[in-house]
Length: 215
Ligand code: AMP
Image (tube, rainbow, N blue to C red; front, top):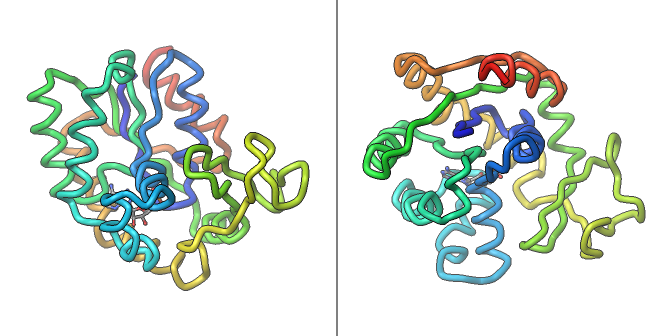
């Protein structure tokens, strides 16, 4: 399947994407994970993105489109992909449309996962992430803590609070979402392949997506 997952930070896009990959071999493409991996590895891309990410601002559309143009042409995308955290602005959505047409790819659906603000704030402030750029497993101190406190179950690296998950950065990221990303809902509604899912459980989101796809 070829889907775009829209939703505020903390809406559950990453969790839903990971579950969907198990259905048909589609790959999760998270621009946030790619950028954090680049920052951790100290690459040129990471150096360009780091300051904006720390503040909770978006990195430039050009940088993101450069990443996506390459990523979507990698062989593992042939079975399908779940775009998690991209596109995030109208110029990115416009550029994606041109890119998909050039590559001869048709999207199945754009899903907006909508979760109340208080649930999002609680989730983000209690979320913890594996500091290993190649792992980035997600935990939650309340609902899904690592077996050994502060240590990743999967790779043994320290599990930390992301620098953009302090209270100030979280509220800035939510503001950025409302200003820059929420307008994509109108964009994709006009394109006619848009589905809105109001659900706080990832299983309910998956069920709604499957029903819409007829799977
Ligand atoms: P995320 O993990 O998706 O919340 O992304 C973390 C941070 O990476 C964001 O706050 C942005 O600074 C940056 N980022 C991720 N995806 C994009 C994108 N599509 N456009 C611009 N910045 C992005």
